[in-house]
Image (tube, rainbow, N blue to C red; front, side, top):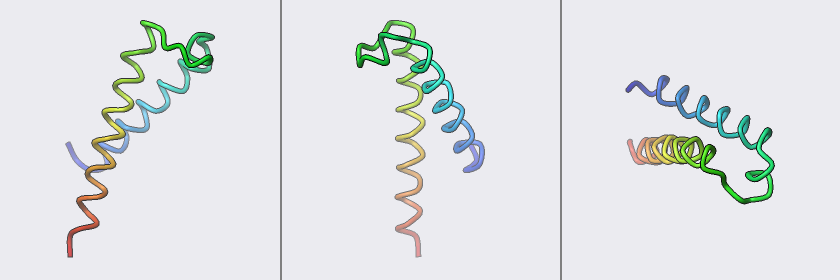
Length: 61
């Protein structure tokens, strides 16, 4: 996955997660629902991958 496509996937996952939270009363009250759990998990995974890549890039000369 290219750096750009990885970032786009991360932003799409962020959008899906925030869109779900905006429409889900349970998630708004910090009580994740069964529908939101996988959406949020994908976002966290994409965020972690992006953060790891950015941090690794900083170590490059």
